[in-house]
Length: 403
Image 1 (cartoon, helix red, strand yellow):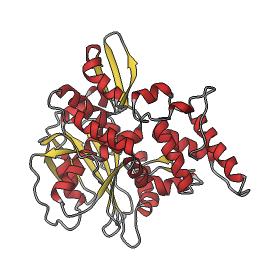
Image 2 (tube, one colour):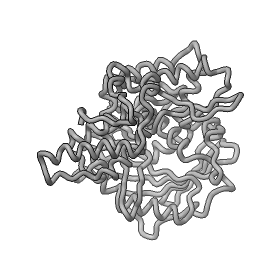
Image 3 (cartoon, one colour):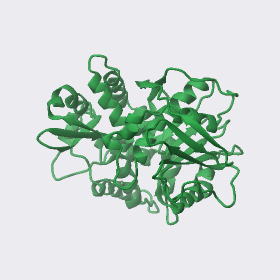
């Protein structure tokens, strides 16, 4: 597919040359592609293949939608996805589902241009000379966006824009709002980041993951200011599921790496896209995957879920996710976690399935209004108080890491 190009009526193909697809110059030279342009590119590829294979058939519209959803038309990533469609013989959305969950993020990390971006991003995030830049990088990864003062354009915004990490989404005379370039780039960068832990106890067993213990330790380490930040607020929920996903992803990853140093689990954010008439387009929030010897573990998050939402997430976990992440005879386990604020629980608080599943478990977490603690209710009916002590450090980057 490398010989095919998208077109907007001008000959921009010569500008691709030596520009990094993650740089601001690249974004200036080539505007983000639309879903229709991606579909046109895939259609050209289909017609080219049919010259030698009349029976070749590609789900052009379905794959274009999948690629656009993850890349938001970011040219370098669109090109990579289309290349994988060709080399991996991905013909349908179902083929994309089977391949992209873990492999897409890993494939992006293998690219030379991304390795340069990754190293630079790590330096920006760990900068000791510009603490505000470090803070903004953490907010972008955890919350997806950040509001800057206009005066911070040169000291903060331009560093992120020039590396292609962020883009300006809106402006006012006094403020600039920047956001991550696209969901896929955020997921890839999160794969290389985790919170530094000041302390972490040793679990009873270190040869297999104890998800109850991991969730308990992770909740104790959340930073209330991240959950209460302006970007974490929503109109109908006490806080954003998106922000919770970023916060828990990095904490769970740090806990697993610190407490289980000998286990080779990789952690993936928003694991696999699902598309069917029954389930619509869905993703699991957090996935811990071993090489296939040890079971995979999935966390599916809700915020103040209703009874219908709880039932739907549980049913989807049983019918789809559990089978999707079970490798051979090693069953996957799933935690359906409902996080709520005391006094704003939602009708699904304390909901339990009528028939329990051996591998899918419901957990309810009720946060105190001042975020000093949380009441955790396990599916067994056992309740326990967890003190929220914070206790994770700055977001740390490990460029080139495989987890």
